Image (tube, rainbow, N blue to C red; front, side, top):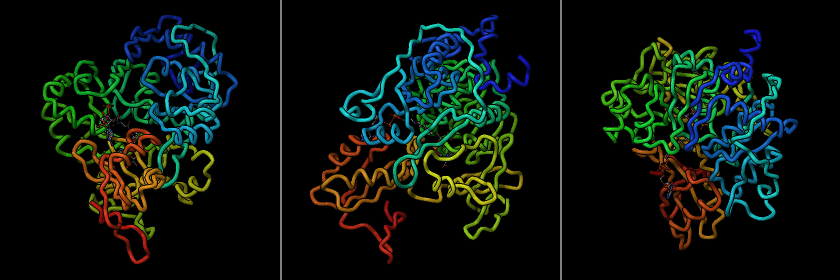
Length: 482
Ligand code: MLC
Ligand code: AMP
């Protein structure tokens, strides 16, 4: 195989020829009590690839298990688009994800319980078994780099989640840029316990090691004790994970032998950055990204790491700041503007949403992130916040206020509602619903949302109020709620 062909192979460490010739790694992925070698993954995924070849798109209930790893790699071998489905999705979310994506089958297992109401789309799809111990060494030609590897569902400010189309080419570019910035090599052992249905845990956290050739230890829940026990060189976490780590001094100190601690998906509070540095002797690397863009900004293994700042554009990325009136904002470290990015790791648009896709790009080809930022003279970026109060980040999860409001308005006790993210030491923001209604019981309302949507979309708190603050146009003034 020529170097050029190898570079085009998305999961470079899983080249069947090289693995068969002895380039194996006995514990390439440790997850859920299983230890998978490269040859286990190539053989199991090869067998699955043969079963699913020819399908267009399949759904994987993305539990952190060996079967999920085999299912995802098998689809990547076969060139079948994967829709990773959050295991705790509610019935309405499932129905939307499955009908919007047109997924043709479940791989491994379908959801159980209330989410699988009889007659629902989720219940009607066939289930293709995933056998972790199966073996098939039949080779599959590398699918075209422009083909869609994943449809990742992510919340917008209103309405149902949108399907982000990620190509193989974008994923390869995104991972290579990170490997360069973090000096990530096959000598590393990556440790994390993040969900396998978002960019952070899935693309960086699972495909990253399989491309770079490093080991992966998935801890299940990302608890401080599990991180301390894992003995890795490279750790990923959302700020909530790092904040819990620094509250457990013994576990934090156990990380001092690592090479890099990386934080992302939400702002890392400066006190957490500082405590982590003091307890481990390692200054955390911060990086910024989105489902739509993968990771575009990061501090570097060999560069400055500054609390509150997310660093420089990674390889191939350009950024600019634009004021509300369209003027370009100076890079003086103080002036703020809407952050726009472009680069090879960006998505190909939202599935079935040409309107939303068009809205998110400028006429001259920049992606409008919706985040507000400042850039200093050296090109260092600081994320100031979201332009809209209607996108909440809680525990690193992105939640659209509108989706939670729609669920609450479906309860007979609710007349009016406004959902906001209020500051929270542990979660960054916590979801709080302000409700106008008759005899509404807060616990019942939280349970109502839990019956329809994923766990992390439940309000932590419901506050009953007489009325919502509105402006002269009748629009709710969310900034006044708190
Ligand atoms: C939650 N619970 C509630 C509740 N909400 N109980 C009552 N009322 C509510 N409203 C329950 C939970 O089910 C859980 O129960 C318990 O409370 C604790 O919940 P928690 O505090 O949320 O903790 P935990 O479940 O441990 O989760 C924290 C976390 C998790 C950090 C591990 O939030 C997480 O995995 N976040 C990662 C999100 C992520 O990967 N984002 C990346 C997006 S990609 P029980 O019984 O289960 O304990 C992206 C791009 C980029 O952003 O840049 O990376
Ligand atoms: P998601 O769609 O879940 O991928 O969330 C993307 C959003 O997470 C971004 O638009 C930012 O608002 C936020 N985000 C990601 N990384 C960071 C970071 N390092 N600092 C601040 N915000 C971040």
